[in-house]
Length: 124
Image (cartoon, rainbow, N blue to C red):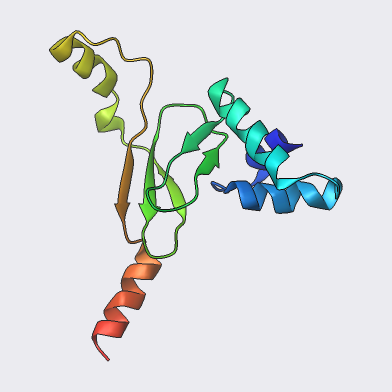
């Protein structure tokens, strides 16, 4: 149920959001159980854990190589496909000799909605 909640969320839920979803079907589940299982699922490579500095981790059921945008205003995480970075892993390996087993790349900034809100505040 925890895995399904991540897959069906349509975004990048936090453990708390997954807990709220799963609790509707299984009211006796604990938040600790959700955290432990999300950790195990990400360690096994079934889902991705997206670490957010100063905030809650988010989880992603999309395993294909892609990148993330983190809005420092509202805290949402968005997917972004950047085909121009498709050779990043190979480039790092060629330049350093380092065998890359995986990586996470998250851009931080403001989403369009938060940027507009900030601009409106500045104009008042």
